[in-house]
Amino acid sequence: MILYTTVPEELIFPHENSTTNQIVVDIKEGQLILEQVSNQQLKVVRLISSDPNAYLNENYSPGRMISLF
Image (cartoon, rainbow, N blue to C red; front, side, top):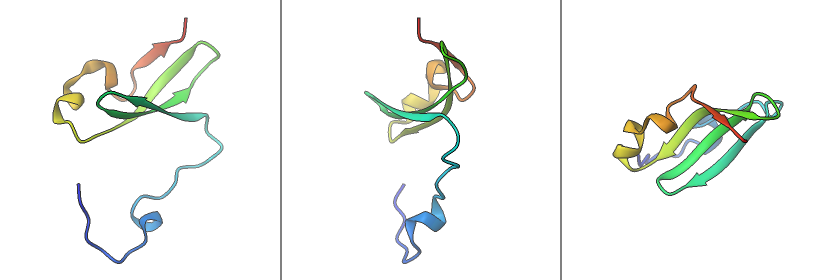
């Protein structure tokens, strides 16, 4: 997505609350925003990608739980 605007980026894409345990993970298709639910589980919050096929991958679906071990 390309936006041609004079509006500051912070107003268009506000930063999320920094009190959450979110981390950004680089993947081949782009980036995943993950939230730590417990010591052993992460939850997919958001996928950021320019590859339309990445959004069809069920592993990157928001709400998907990922086990660390």
